[in-house]
Length: 405
Image 1 (cartoon, rainbow, N blue to C red):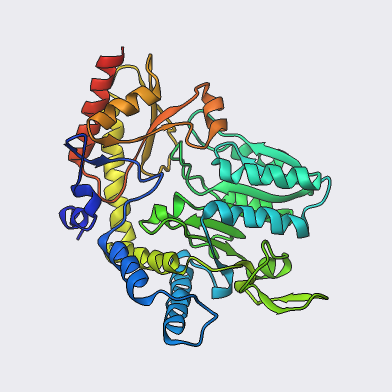
Image 2 (cartoon, rainbow, N blue to C red; image 1 turned 180 degrees about the vertical axis):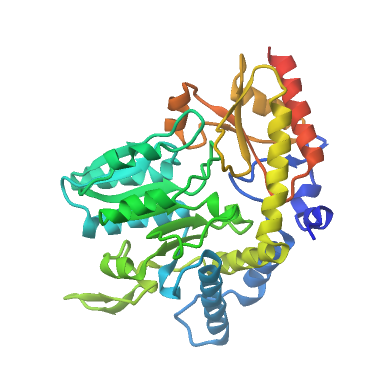
């Protein structure tokens, strides 16, 4: 059963106050809070087990290496990859996407080719492809969305052609909450021999993954949005693609043999894990996966969707408030503006009331441009939020309206 009181007790930060008021945290889309199981484990690892991996023959190194590779296997199962060689640990989803944008483009992108990205992407799934296109003399094409926040699937045939080499798309928009149907996009890309890069940062928390089953070629996710530590991310890549791509960075642990004449590289996945890995972060991410699975991803999703529905209905009652994104499938976040107010002012008033939301362009400026605004307020829901907290949020927004208009 989904026991919200027990879950909230697992997150110590929820017991604190902000501006002498109980913290109401609606910014999980930026970073989720951490349960005690993750906090305690990472603390224990640093106090009692800290040692570099893959390099030592002593007990601590061997044990930490074992835990690190067990974490890789846990991630593999969680995202639905076929083999451990397809799971690369990185410093975050941005690093994962940049790895592909550099290494894949070096091997596969040619002058005159094109890359297709959706209009609703986070900057981290736009800018790396701009850089790759500029470097290789390729074209960047944009798949638009409509005013409801649905991707324009009808335009796929005019954008994806024989020179398309990669399509980059989000599994869940961090601004519009849209969870696009990626099946036709994957099919269209594969029909011309292109590969698909999926940004799973928001999606993995809300029913995403199943990467092999869904035909994704690359998949990026970060640990800190999945209730895990910061500074740890995952890149999934189909084995044959990762084997064909050159290394992204050189250094220790990614080599087989080094001479001044020639260097050969370690097998996957170490080929892409140069330097000292964030081994404590990786094991902490595995603990976060254990935590969400112990509660049940379906139960979490049901709870969050109920809160999303309730919050949407209540916020819409506020005069002058506009919600952006009305797609059929949405992840649990709401982006909105209020006529005659600035998002930063609304956010600051809410902060005085102990309510944490996001304000600004959310690293998705093309979305802002589409709607003709410079920024939005965003309330993103986590498993630990409650209906009572939604009521506090709504009353806070109403108070902000009264003060600012």
